Image (tube, rainbow, N blue to C red; front, top):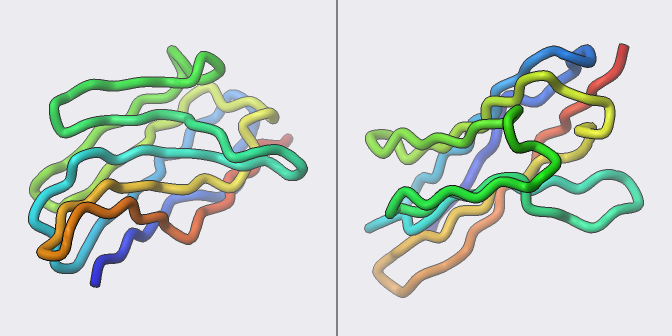
Length: 119
């Protein structure tokens, strides 16, 4: 049994910052990748940032230079530092982790955390 839990969402003003956290727990042998996705009302879920165990990082063009993904391997946690937030960043943010367990490799989603950027 594995679980992925996000935290850190909330309300921020345009130009402000928030940091999201995503922690994977359970019977995990390894974490192959962790990524952040977001879904705004009426839109499809989109990739925001992705980090592999090998250190490869990918960002959506819309967040390059503003968002930073990082990972703390000691506690199976990934972070998304979001700076210079814009109203168009408003969405539910989801964490996805590709996890190695005793029964195979699975992609697990968190429940999502709301980020609202508004003055």
